[in-house]
Amino acid sequence: MKLLRVGTPGQERPALLDADGTLRDLTGLVADIDGTLLADAEALGRIRAAADAGALPVPAGAAPRIGPPLARIGKIVCIGLNYHDHARETGAEPPSEPVIFFKAPDTVVGPDDTVLIPRGSAKTDWEVELAVVIGRTARYLESAEAGLAHVAGYAVAHDVSEREFQTERGGTWDKGKNCETFNPLGPWLVTADEVPDPQALSLRLWVNGELKQDGTTAEQIFPVGEVVRYVSQFMTLYPGDVINTGTPAGVAMGRPEPKPYLRPGDVVELEVTGLGRQRQVLARA
Image (tube, rainbow, N blue to C red; front, side):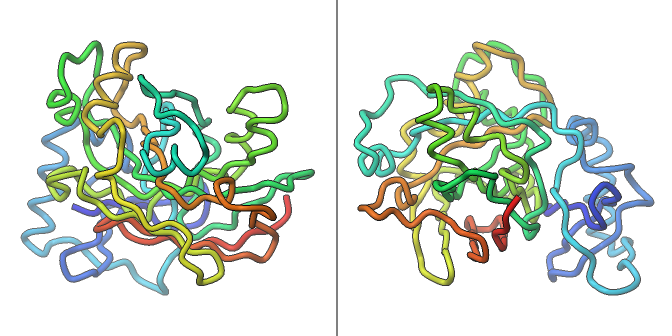
């Protein structure tokens, strides 16, 4: 299933995109798309049955704004330097263990919402990523297979980053990762049954129509199941938590000088196979 949330910011309502690409209203079935729903197999079954029966209504009115596909995110765990080609372009050694940092849930915006360049920023960068959404509580998982079994679904994430804040302002990555609007998510949360192999997905990103990133999750140093297993050794993952699994080569930081960092008015578009497409216009904060 492709689950999403539509409406004005803070007033989104649950919806589903059916097999024909038609938006369907879920407000009569569920309160929202969140961790509580993802952990409830019976509720998900009701949505699936109603969709299969053609019983879900089409929302009235004009096409609404698409918001983030997930409400009340507990935490966003991010994996750094998780693609062989990205490590090569930045001159970094591939890590022996996953590099972990965090983004605050309030960085999340809709897939087509404006992204704000922070005040004082000269090095705002792009990063297309596969986001993993947790559907079952995960503690001390013993295998990558168990890691995959705890995934509810997948989404497109844009891990926007300010590189000066990240690497030149005291050495803590979180400074360059948590500016407002720095995690567009969506358009959909695609349930795991529709993604049989998360290591066979293409990721692409364009800036002003020019292809900048063209990668595949096959290049991940630590695949999805292993990432979930590993993270569960250090913290408990709950339904509705998100893991951003890293970006392939092609970011501005990895390019020759002068590096083409983002500026106000730039348009960024990105997609992951089967998970939809995003489009953001950059503006000043």
